[in-house]
Structure formats: structure tokens, C-alpha cells
Length: 175
Length: 236
Image: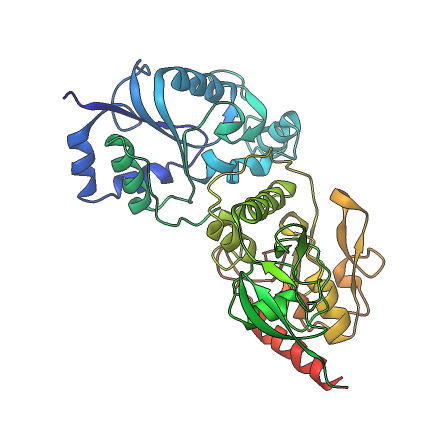
């Protein structure tokens, strides 16, 4: 049997969920035996491949780029997992949601700048009006909350979906 | 006058009860677990949060905290239907304001958060509202963060009924309701506030906290305040 295709994606988050993923200890060897990591901040692939079995997505959807990435991922993934509080609730990125984007950018990059006060427009994606959880835009198959999610919960979820079982997660703190 | 002894059925089991007690008091006294948020021992119940809903005689749902027991009553404390409603209530509380747990002083010690966990909430099906709400830092020792308030009114009741100061009240209606000090003055300017902090300790979330704590550091002494409330009730 060929190995399953696993991907991980980092949207608007701090990469703490990826740190928790790396913190699986020896569990990561089991995962590596069952799946190939085909796309991730941890590997070199530049384009999200087709036919991915499981994708773990960290972070909220905050920019136009996040949204188009997420839509591509959803179209090319069998099981999509919201990994961590930012993906599940929009968490810390959502704290800007009560402030209009232009006002926010002016405040940070113009009023708050010591040098070169200007709102950056080149090479950065446009922000969406609000940072929102993944399931506001696409169907999400599993939610794994936590800031970051506990490594044992990540392993329990990954082992189950890689073996085709329904995941039975340890009681994880919400939010 | 001695209270009349009656008996009711809780989840099929016959339980002795005193007339005048609420279903919540009797059920918890009999060791049943019914979740609640706005109830605090020693304070008058208001039925605000609806988490303690139980089914009467297999049908109508009522809050256990405000419904008195009656002879022959049969109460169901949990069922798939009740659990689904409780979960929905918690999800609605979570979308109503900005409960960003990861940066909250009460993270890990929050009654709303632990209820969400125990009800198996792993995501919220409703759209988050992200309302713009103020933070009151005017008080010398305490902070009021409306982003984390669930309108349970425990602060209002503990201040009025136990401390006897009645600094707090509720302003507005429905989703626009907001806890206010005195006539909507900043907390720091409330002349009736005695600085006792009972409201802070009674608050189930991070909406009221002592100043100076960082994320996860604010552990509420709710049990002590509830104990004081119960003793005061007994002495009346």
C-alpha cells in the first residue's frame, strides 16, 4: 500500500501549532511511516499538490492570499483539519476585527512608525475586513482546538485519520 | 414553620425534598451534576443563562435554578436533546462577545471555558459577532472587560445581596445589555464601591479580574465568596 499524503499549512498564526506538531516525540516516527509530508512550511514544495489525503491548517483566514490558499487546499484535500485556536475561532488574529482595516494600517504603519511612515502595498497580500475561522469559508472535517493543541491530541487525531478510523480525541480545552 | 417534606423523581429515582427548594438544589443535593453559569450558592437565582435546563415529566424544559419542586414531579436532568441545547447556549455565549481565551487572565480557570470543554465543544457553528466593546480600567485594583462578560449578573447580585453596596446593574436589552456601575459611570468613579472585590471573585469568566495578573494567572476565589453568601443568607 502506498503511503498517504499529508500536508500542513500555516495561515495567520504564530507557528506554535507547528511547534506542537514537532513535539510529538517518537510519535512523529509512526506518522512518518504512514504518510509522506508533501507540502508544509517544513518541506520545500512550492505548490500545493493534488490528491492530498489529510491537511492540517494552522491559523485564521486574514488576507486574500489566505483565502485563495484555503480554497485551493480544500479542493485538493480529502480531510481538512482546523489545527489550533486561530483556525478554529480566529483567536488572537481576530482581535483586530473591531477596527476597520484602513484605520488599523494607518495606526500601525503611519502613526506608529518612527521611519518611512507608509502603508505597505508591494509584495504583501491585501487584508480581509476581518480575520475569521476556516469553517466560515470552507467545509472543515475535524476541529482540534488548543493554543497550541496538545501533542497527544494531534497524534491521536493524526493516527486515527491516517488509519481511516473515526478520531477519538482526549478531552481538549476549548479556547 | 417547618418546610413540608415531599418526594420527587430525578432521572427515575425517588428523591426526598423540602417544599420551597429549587430543582437545582434538590438535584445537586442528591449528587446529580447539572451544569450552570449564573447560579452561585447563596445568591438569589435569576435563570439568566439557561444552562441548568431540565425536562419536567418528560416534556417541558425549565431552568432548574428557578423552578421549585412539587410533589410528584419527575425531572430529567440530561438527555441528547438537553445536551444539544446546553451546547448551543455555550456556543451562542462564545460568539456573542470576544472571548479570546489564549490571552485571558482566566484561561484555564474559567467556568465558561470548562463548560464548553465538558460539553464537547470543539468548534462553534454560529458566526462570531466580534462586537466593539469597552474595557474599564478606571478602578484602582480591578478591571472590567466587557468583551468577556456573559451577563450572568453574579457580580450585580453578590454586590447587592452580600456586600450590600449595589454598585452594579444591567443596562440595555437583549444583545445590547451591559453591566454598568452606578448610573453608567466609570467603575473608578463609583462612590458606592467599597473595593471589596466580591464581584471579581464571583465572576465566572475573565470579565472581572484583579489588576496585575498575566494570562492564566487569575484564579477566582468563588467558593469563599459563595460561602460568605450562604452564611449571610442563614443569618438573615
